[in-house]
Image 1 (tube, rainbow, N blue to C red):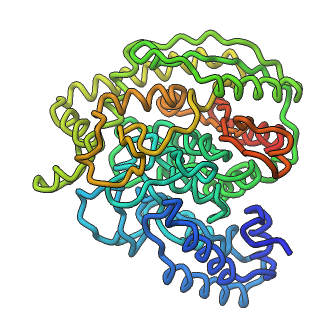
Image 2 (spheres, one colour):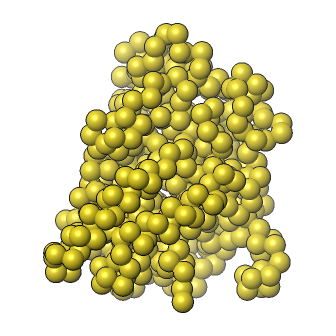
Length: 476
């Protein structure tokens, strides 16, 4: 008999709706896996077991009283929210020791939408402080680790959610993405991660975002599971899951290694990133698409403008003066700089980013999709960004040896192709097309599995369905 956690999210949904599984059985099973695995994985900050079991019991009562067609689309489905999303009655830590621990009075927009869709919340997952970084390490809980190699990071800022899905502690999970925070951990953990276009779904975070960078999107083990979650988030949408039965048309796909960060942070992609790109090109070409080089030019003023917009929210966060010292070095540095900037400087940066969006979208319009590697490097060791030599990532922040600017540079070199997609408001998907060192025997269960590496496909406005169709066409 197939274990519950080995079911796809689509299969689990079907079993819950049919009554083959009860919501309580599913919740108990996944809570048990979380209890067993989380001490070494660090995926969860908070586990809401009692609340989950009570909600599951209520879902089972509802299932006994209503016909299947009247059940919510994700009836009884367990999931968790990254700890930037408010869930009523649960503390939202924002990954910070500087905030007081007070339960959220009401659900945030994302949690409310998925509660309406019938889901059961099992807890809150690990995030970097205020979601600022491409790794999920902070001073309030152990770091989120990569299930494929526990010495490596699961990425960020949706790192805990990605680790939980990859380790089968959850069938899928919503993440939020303001500069790559769904796609980066998806690539690091070998998942399909979709960033929808601006405005399609709730943001999923309860902090400021003056540039409109943040949008929520699914982290899943397949395109079908991602489509199922997106259908719940966009109930009036085109029917993303059903659309996977359609083959996408032959597409003109432009390959680009250009990055708006390369002027200030020159980088050389790892061989593994280039191998992933080559694998993606081969798969897309074999599927009948025309894959050609694209020459994209980015304005070199982008890094300063993006950083100003990205850090504006943490500058405005309500933190008691006596607790400022509890912030991580990167957060404290960027908060201070944000507070020292004038409103005019912020407005100037926002105006530049709007022009950057127009210019970049116009260049992308020459192709149906733009293809890049998801990451320029393999998943980084825990503690690598912060200079934590012994890599446990969990001790007083004052002992982190790296400085804020070095940390930020490393992140931009690690994920140089993600943030500009948020500025442009476009949808994009990360697909895990390559494993480092993986051979035939390891794919069949023997040998070292290696680390996942992905490609990113950037679409036009409204192309979420097409991106998922292409991911499914490639076998994911």
